[in-house]
Length: 442
View 1 (tube, rainbow, N blue to C red):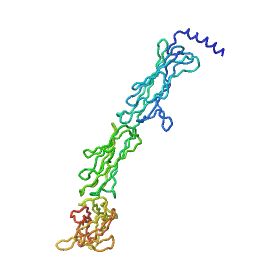
View 2: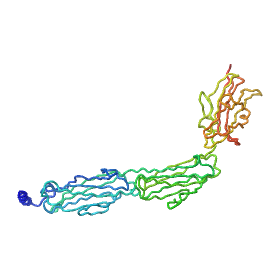
View 3: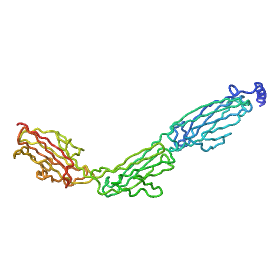
């Protein structure tokens, strides 16, 4: 102990002999050692993270001031952090900070440096708690900028300074919105009600968002229920609008509404649709949901070259539904299978009509017969050529098959035979297929 006192007694006069200590060099400095951001996620620190709207983060700065026996006297330091105030605001400090000053986008700490009679460096630190603003307040900003400035001032008011910057990305939130329709049998039937659900999530904390739904065309559907209650939407110009507040990024918002279908519905109306739109400040996301209108929908297919043509093609002219041409000798028979399939959502019956036998100058040139099975079966030629042969009621995706047999009576001539399907009581074909047969020399 006596030895330490003896060293101190020698050291202090020696330092004074040097004159007024400088703020730089051997008598102290303002070097910033570290400057970074940290966020606690599930209790663990994440350093320099992508900043999440609505979440808290800390900015930490540390600077060297004086080493052993360097700052003897009235040395003081100032440590200041400035940042984008449009992105974040200062939170609540949980510990005492000497000389703390807080402004918009700036926090500083200022104090005297203790006399450094020992070994090692004196350090100044500043820990600034920040709250990242909600997504709707960021105005499209994609990066966060922060700057740290340090100063060391000696008794002669000379300064040493240090500076450091960093920038961090702002978490790019993924808005999501969807619209779903729910009806018995998965179809919008005339005169019935259809329930709709719109869901939305912002992917990031936001204090305000707008969820809007454009209703189905009011000519075909009328709003019955728009989620009444304290959070009822504003109904205007065929739209429902909800104002959403204080959303967490993980919140899933669900809103329901119901519409009643018109009766009748137009024959050419295939679907009923509604569109959802989620808006948060500069960002938006939309989605359209639809539900089919269950019109009768028959589809004809005709066998051709070992397969079938016409699947999914519905045309009253049969322009793209022509079977591969058959070349047969006079007196021989070309046979084709016709498939009548119900592609509609409702069970339905259909009428089938086909060309009769072809004649020329009173003589038969091509004999055409129809049978109610793919092989064998009853002769239904009279009903088919009259356009009155019925498939019977076919459930959704159910099919019925008939066979067409064409026999040329002469050679060196070609015939095209058409078969059409109609709705009962309706003269216009819904779908049509064709077969071509050429009679060749024996």
